[in-house]
Image 1: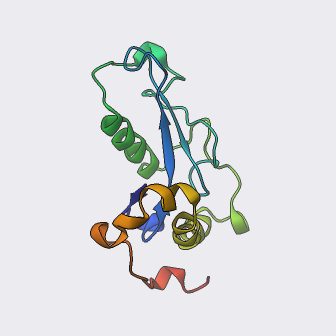
Image 2: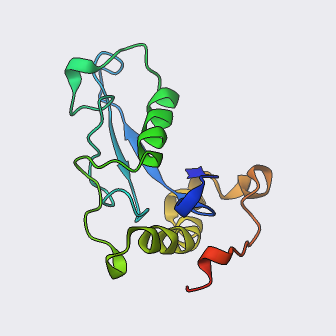
Length: 139
């Protein structure tokens, strides 16, 4: 789960997966975001130099934490890759991303994986409170 992002992703909660092969760290994992986040197609593999799309650039010293941070870094740079969203609500990228952030909170908090693994920790990680953002007013 990723939260605490800035800009058009502000306020959103995002679930994703880093799926490691049996022989990890000898081979790279793949990454998916499990929901609409406005940047990546839900449940599609994301093409990054740190994923199984580019085994030639894989470094076995990279941990899952490095992979997640690399994904977030790419995500926030607003660049496209295989697995990126190409069509947006109202043909407006910022509107789409703000709406995805707004909708993501409910989606994540009601997701079975979240409930099974993280729900207990909501008050401890600070995601148990409703927020209102000016950028969410249209929704």
